[in-house]
Length: 509
Image 1 (cartoon, rainbow, N blue to C red):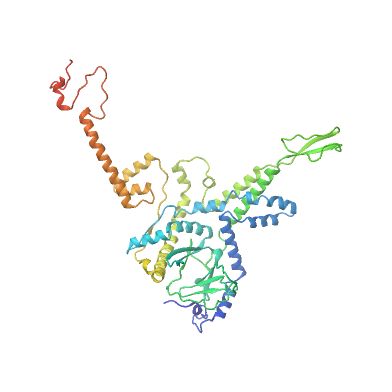
Image 2: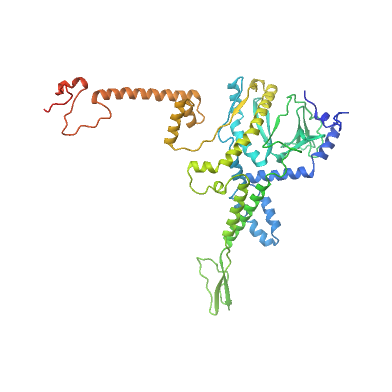
């Protein structure tokens, strides 16, 4: 039995509920408790992290340069290089290295109609979505994943998975318990065709209802709906148990700082690379010199009598910028258990040596599987609840749900891979069909079996053909006769006709 958020937020310090809130009181509560400067700053911080992970943040970086430098001309010369200096993305590199739980597709099963469940997973592209979820949860440390049924203009019902990062979400907490989330405010992206005052900026979701809110947190009249799902369609996923306020504070800000620092050093590196030149200095009478000459290394400068040219080296040591960038990258990667050699892909190591360096990452992978397994189980039950109400034809039962995470294997050579397969097949832990599927991702069991049967048939035909050839010419492995050896025609039954004695020796003709 679910309870309306209008009742939950009306709780007294004793826990009792005197009277449900009305729409005005709900708006007042949300504006005071959720629409705060702190929450707005948190949204902005995660929005910037989203942008930088996707190679954005140019406007922010230009603002950083405007703050660290004073002279307008100096600022303009460096801001001109911002767009071209984003070739190193430390946030993306570290986050992607950390996110290996879904590097291989996971196997999800239910106790009921597995075929229907597998078809649903293919429809919502579950493996691809969860691969993205794994990366985003390492980027933000927490986020929401939602499930809904989209109705197209043709009337077709399409199940859909949505991801909302902390840049677009705010948590509504219980009045008496700051660690209990009773509702989620999810930013909407409504684009009206007509001017209207009732443009929703947020949607408030709870286990009981859904209601649209304006940007100032006022309730839009007529938008209240009791969805009847019994659960909130938005499911949180975190890498650790959430504390007071749900959000993990400023965890992950070291990635933001490293990204900005490395970006800034790359801006300075490119600017100084362009400016690294020797400037000509003219002394003496320059009145007879031609004006507007190009000071380029391919074009000589003409000077008149009485004029001397000297040069001033305006370049600086560019290794200083490279060293700072590498130091920041190495220090930040160490914060997450990754040696700098692994992040920078230094050296040529064997597969075994590389796996030794990745041991801390494998430990983190195992740690991440615990909260992600718990999230996926809860999300499967939300999917079942939403489909049971909004798309009964696609419904399934989440009873007996379980998941087996795929294990990323160390790359092996062809011979090593085949030797390992033969030993595993002998031990009874795999078979030829699984081997074919592993080498050809996406192939079905029936197709793999058909391929196996085809190979067996062809090999059978080859063995029969080779037996005929062996009967005609002797053992397949026998050497060709030399010029001085007699040629024995026919098989074993023709031995007597070729002068072969009973002792097995051939008589000399």
